[in-house]
Length: 124
Image (cartoon, rainbow, N blue to C red; front, side):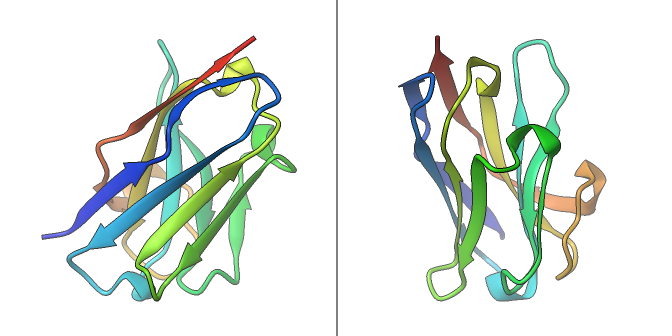
């Protein structure tokens, strides 16, 4: 049984930083791509960032480019999302997701496993 457990969310002022972590168990973590998604109030879930199996390829949605960094440590079965220069519009529940293949994927349907989500609130 695959489990993804996020941590690191919280309340931060605009311009601040947070680092999200997602610990994975239940399958060979290093064989699969991982992604971070978010769902803001009244909005649909959207891709934030994704990373391939070895960290050599990444994807970022336009609104977070230059501010967020996705990374992974396969020895620790953990994927991270470093979020800098946070804005109020980044407020959302952030979800970690495990992909079906090793390559970078950006569609919700390409991810089979999901964490419970962690709340990120950015105050102005």
